[in-house]
Every structure is written in structure tokens, then in C-alpha cells.
Length: 165
Image (cartoon, rainbow, N blue to C red; front, top):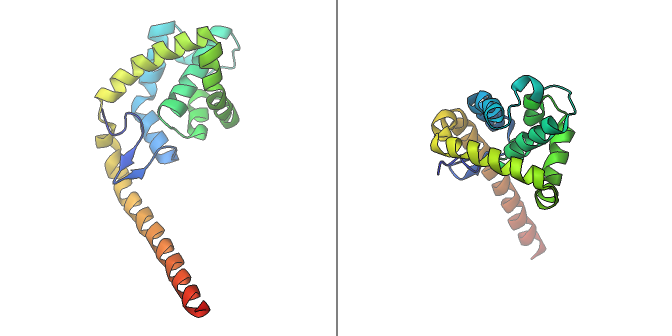
């Protein structure tokens, strides 16, 4: 399985949920995700990003949203931009996902069919090659920044302990 198949790790730094990772993911797979919905459910990109409230379209839109948020850990704002929905709708969808999986057989069938289809392709593709170079320098800088903060806090604790004793 690809290092990015179920989330992005580079140098043990979790990149899931970041806008950069989300944009890179959708830049690489966006058209494929729309095509998969069209192939499996005969719902095209235009309908997915429309304001149509037809139940068939809404279920597919929720499925894509949750595949991206729950399945791949993408940022809700990026999902919202991709599906032309509000960020809060993407968050709501991810919160309701497990309830829908348990109680809504239609949603369960659509989600399983869609996610299994896209996941096979995405796992086989090595997203790490496409994104690792973009994040390595930023990730190293972030690690250094976090280590400096931790070192400062530890120094303060040692100083506080010495002044108390």
C-alpha cells in the first residue's frame, strides 16, 4: 500500500488534513474522482458540483465528500471547493458518515462501491512520488520549529525546578 493510500506520512510527519496535501491529492485525482462517479452511477461532474437536490446526486456528493475526508483525511475547505459545497457541509457529512453507514443501506451501498473503486486505483498509484518533494523542506522546517519550542519549554521547566530547590 502506498504511504499516502490511507494518509500522508513523510519522515513520520502526518500531512493529512493540510490544505497543501489536499490540493495535491485533488490535483492528481480530481478528474478521476468525477469520472468514477460518472462510470459507477451515471452522475457527471456538472451534476455533482451543481445545487441540485435530487436524492441520487446528494448521495453521490456525500459519498465523494466522505471518501475524501474520512477515507483520505483531506481538509474540509478543500473538499468544499472541489464539490462546490460549504466547508461546514463537508464537516457535517464526515460527522454523520458512520450513522449513515449503519442506518442508511442506500448510502452504505453507494459509499462501499465508490470507495472500493477509487481506493484500488489510488493505492496502486504512488502519490508519495508526486508530493514528497513539495513537503520535505516544509516538513523539515516544521519539525525544527517544533523541536525548538519543545527545547524552550524543557529549559524553562529545568530553570523553574532549579529555582524552587
